[in-house]
Length: 198
Image (cartoon, rainbow, N blue to C red; front, side):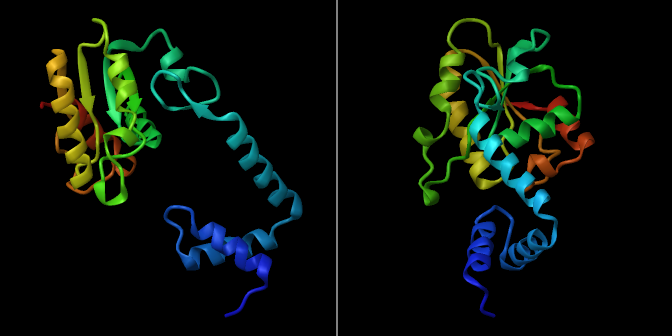
């Protein structure tokens, strides 16, 4: 079916979003055309403001409005443990269980040579800078139990072991091929409690 050019462009842009296929993009586009103009303008304004105001935390690389995210700025967080995750959304999954009290580090991806993602494209250098000194005693590698997640975990273990820091990995209460942000709280809690040395 042929759509008017502005509608076709809207559908094409929506399709670029992760998890949005052609049919979902069409549904969203037609929905946006039906809602009052004020609602569409509010959405556009919120998107632009978020893009303008959000940045990455200077310390952990989490999404933040300020130089330091709320977690890094919280003096009650345990500074001796850093949980390394692939994406910022994984922090929300772990925080949901309300048991982990340490800090985080976001890699912004996983090793994936097929997509051109090597160690230099991840935030590994920033992690290594954080590990200088004696503050951090344990790094928990909380990457998804997928081929890319396992490769990234093995790479991190190889790079971090010479630093004399305890390196652990979430227990595989997580299903193989599963993703952190889809895991229920009990599974995540179990995975953190029964993490293993790498």
